[in-house]
Length: 258
Image (cartoon, rainbow, N blue to C red):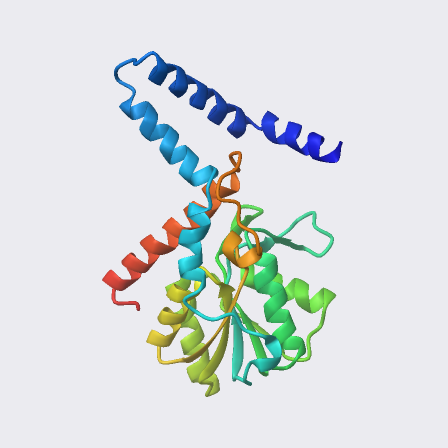
């Protein structure tokens, strides 16, 4: 009964209904040999590959696996920990004052675990900005303040302020390291983002120890991968994450940031 309800919910999803209707339309067009179905077939193929197959996950896994997965107990000590922004923002109505999305929870919990283990004497938060009461504030400032309020850490906690992008975070982290005499950094970010982030931080002269987390590819999350299934909207976000990083790598390489 439970599986039937899940199937019913899945079949009722707008994406599934759209795909089924498109498949039926294409099938009828092919049986009746209607001309001009080339674009229709191309649209069906693109939709099917991105939502019904593990292709987006396979693409993302190629980025996620560029740096090996780590275990906290095997990581070396460092001068400071950097938790990159993305998916972390102040939450006006959240009990903790922090709203986490898009893998932000994994980045933050990994960085906090390193801090609790005192893998470094300081935890540094990065991130962009959030609009509050008509004024742009640094997400890292707000999150650092909330963390200090709800969960005091045994290490110093610092903010990189309002950062525009990963390159900005790397430049600010390097400047802070130069002031403090730091060299080795435990860099925490999503596994798919780590190739660009680690190369950008290393370009500033820092000694980077990659701590990838927030694995989104099904190849890294499950022992069983379904090769064809009803459409799932998650394929869109996984493909978008892969495309974002590929374009980001190309742009950073062109600017000499890697």
